[in-house]
Length: 253
Image (cartoon, rainbow, N blue to C red; front, top):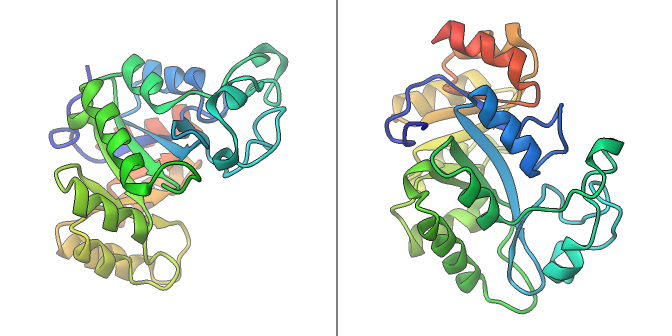
């Protein structure tokens, strides 16, 4: 069993959308492969469906990662589940379905820390507040509260801190204009997630560390590059190439 988020040591390796170089991103096989290799964290993306179910998918639409078409917010779960979400990656994954948040957390409870990237709360039939409550119920029903944190932009952080401040937050707001540390302080986030190559990245990392805020890096698939970022103060590296980058993180730790 993995240690809870509050206890797990740093630096950490984060499987971005699961181990997505060996299995279709944001699917059960990708998450299972990441768990099997011992990823500290798994990052996944969630959107609400038209009927208010939390679907695991990176894009707002299903087109790129399935044989279907349309925005998730305009599709019911039954419609989404009828799509092939694996054949695009390779023939061995034909027939794979989009997972839902509850399925992922129930299967992998306690096996890794989950970085849940909330892409939106907006759907035509259910209020944002109700969608947030549904997400929290899933986290609690699967007994995953100690093994998750929520990542999102400003609207996500504002809703999260007002409705459930006890669940840790990772700030994605302010990445483009360099105000991410200020936003993290405003929304009492324990982590920020910076994008590789931002012009002021070293200044931002130092400012975050001075405030006791952990820093995730999005992303690195190069072990040597990942180690350079760890030396600069990064605490966790998101990667698509879990196996190779994990060796660098483990070596550094």
